Length: 134
Image: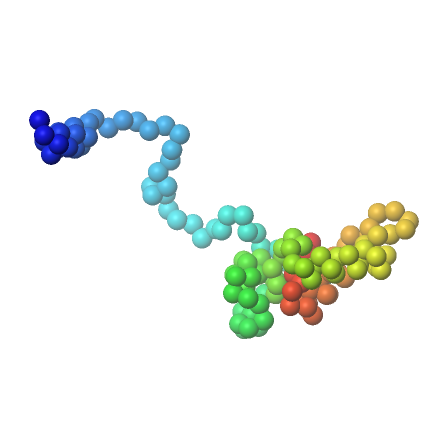
């Protein structure tokens, strides 16, 4: 038998196999699509307001926030996205606030978290390279 006949036989055998049950896998095509986005939750109105974050307003976002951040801000419902400290400016700001602002490092004990978040988010509102925190 030559190579071509061998391949034909193999394909013929492959297509004539009886179906086997696949376990541990769910066919996602059998379900209705949802509009939910996994892992990105909107910030609740009361948390947004108590944290000093501005609301997402589409008309204001065209040129203020980079496109990759704009999508996240829209899903979170905030003017700027809520992100962990990740830019050089944020690292510098955090260091400055730890050294100079008592809300971040209270001498009497724990930091005053709610006040610290409001102070941080006020900075985020006026600086392009600083983002909201909760």
